[in-house]
Length: 215
Image (cartoon, rainbow, N blue to C red; front, side, top):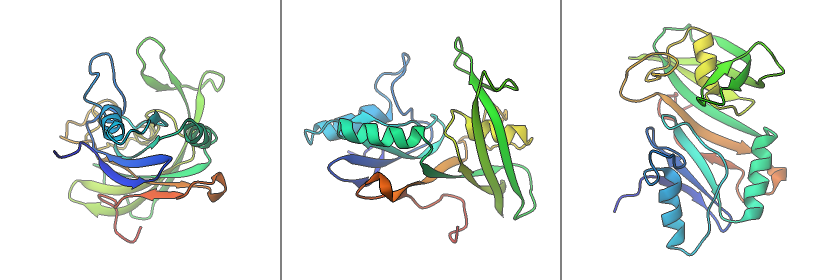
C-alpha cells in the first residue's frame, strides 16, 4: 500500500517526512483520520514507537514536517522552532513577472481572530507577533515567477500574507490571492538547525519543485 507521505530521514528520536499539498498536518473536527499525523502514527505504531507533533504546515502548503519519537526530542525541537533557531527555506510561484534578482523583505505583525482562526495583519504591535519574510525572484516559468523564500519567524500564513502585501498572486492561494489553480504553489524544501542543538542530523531537505537546481 502506498504511503500518504514520503520518509526523508529517520532515526531513533525523530522522523522527517514530506507532506503533499492538500493534506492536513493534524486532525480537525471535520476530518479526524485524513491527516498526516494519523498516517505517521500508524506507521510508527507498527514499529512500536511513539509519535509527538512538533510543528505544522498549512493544509495547502507542501513540504517537510518533523515528528519526534520521544518527549525529550519534542521539547528540544519545539524550543528551536519557538526561538526561531533554524533556517526555514521555501519556494513559491507567483503569477506576476518580476525582474530576476529582485529582493523583498517584509516585516509585519500578525494576529489571529480567536473566533474564526483567520490570520490578519495588524498595525498594533501589542496585538500581533512579528513576522519577517525574505523573498528573491530567482527564475521565470510558464506560470509566472519562481521565488526563493526564507522566513526568520514562523507564523501561521506568514508567507501568504507577505506576498499579498506586495500585491503578488500566489498560484493556488484561494484565501489571500483569490487564485483558483488546482494546487497552491508553496513548498518548504529545507529545514536547517544549528548543530549545537545536538541532533544526529541538522539539515533536512528535499529536491525543490520549481527553483533552479543551483539554489
